Image 1 (cartoon, rainbow, N blue to C red):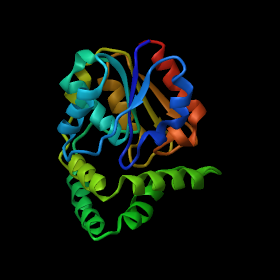
Image 2 (cartoon, rainbow, N blue to C red; image 1 turned 60 degrees about the vertical axis):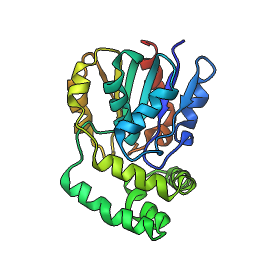
Image 3 (tube, rainbow, N blue to C red; image 1 turned 120 degrees about the vertical axis):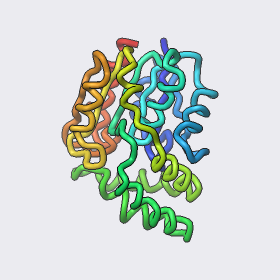
Length: 231
């Protein structure tokens, strides 16, 4: 079977995809690539490709989706299928870019926990009984990755390219998926990607925000399984 390569969101690691890794690793090779070692999307994508199989299914969430689109731009023939989860194909808006500078300065002063807990993570999740445990895991991943990864990823996101042309050129099996209550990357942004990707399918996960892979793992894994059938 075609290997599956997963790219996690900002300040997340393979633990973000633990339900999906458990579900799929019995039948195919599943790997999760880190995306924190460089401060540009182009360099991060090049590193992913350097360590990836010759051909693979590619799924990325949030910043992972942004890097996935650059992987696709750099090596379209290696991507057997594309899944974009809770992400954004557009370049960063000036007002969002401006908001990153004070966050980065706070992290340089040692306030990573505060930036993540008070400014970023509360916007990620839908209300529900599992919200606390999911937030705790997200915070643990962020603190384990540390200050330099935050700074690298922030700079990469600030300067990222618009990828609408990349998506328009891709004709392989494609899934666009998001949580219904995602406020960072809302449904209409995924409808845009659906329109850009020939033959793609949109799956909206109810009772989930920005991380449906953890908030509603069974629904999200089922949607990914349907996509993997075509790869």
